[in-house]
Image (cartoon, rainbow, N blue to C red; front, side, top):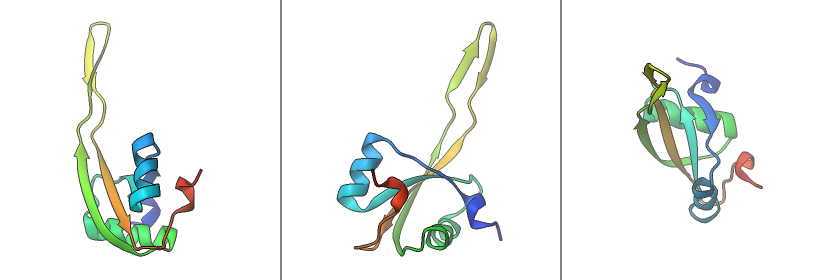
Length: 95
């Protein structure tokens, strides 16, 4: 099994995710591309000591970029939107 800290890479803190966290008890994370919903749920519950109710995952494709005559693209990544049990919060999102 992958270590939980290798599954949950970083929280995504934007205006939209902050609004969802305060109103819907929903938090957004950047997660490992290889992780499935069950592994993400166990990792979030282990790292933050909360109870996860629902998870939605989105595979984000990297944007094409160019530098002069060289073309390439940013790497693909995975985003997880996690809904927690009523009353649970994650301190990293609190302002």
